[in-house]
Image (cartoon, rainbow, N blue to C red; front, side, top):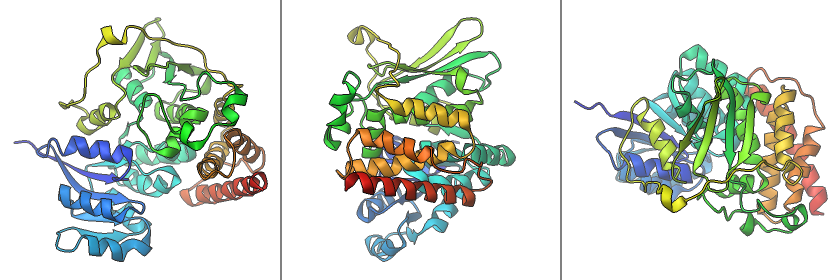
Length: 387
């Protein structure tokens, strides 16, 4: 008899949440969605809850609870709201898909880990800002973190036994984003619409801008350090515009193992959903003769200063990565709102990183205080630039 996994999808209305739903709804015998959450999209969340048969739906904004209750009338799903409810549903599942964007996902993911729940982690910011805290919580509770990002999932698959004892280095591949071949001057005048037009992947606006600045690869550098325990000097970044090789592991004997697959987030999500097994998918397969060639090149930290800033944050330790991430979230939001230019994103991050106490936060509460101070500094700088 097949025992279905009880799944809670945090951020069910986003791109990762939608891809997760596509997979679990295709195999209702293997997966049972018990809870779904969203930030503010009441109608879509209610539709998902009804469609999947989830018993709990949580809207992050408490002011929208009444609207969610109305949207769920006549169903067996309870409407809940607020951070406490998000944390509660994260504790009550076999597998949590952590797909809430930004630091809003910190507490729910931590709640799941502290409860010993397996977490499919699609939220880069959780490990970037609170890597030491989260990895420590997972170890104490015996929780498993399954990386959903295609790059970290590729490394996870290439490691096989999950250990890095014989690893020389990890190689994160980067598409280079929509501005890969442009000069700094050409990038400086690009619009939000141009920045979110990723050549290979279909993603949300924030992560698409992070790809354009290559901050996403900087965040992944820090995330890889926490997931796999290797220092900065053993983690490299290589630009690979086709996005076919998702990352590689080089071993001490000179062997390099690479994971390949289509540019479809359902591939790493499926791996996490079925782990430690595999599941069938309806995803289009790679056609290597059609692809014909694979190109690789070194990244340019001058044109893409976010790469340099992220490595500096990793090597500095303490709160540097948390402050960098907070400033980046504020700056990206301001860029998407047409308040600052593309080049101002990295400039804002660098200014905030240079201004602040670098003490390592000892709790999520302390971390959120650091995050709030960094956001205030970033917002102040954005205001000056916008004026």
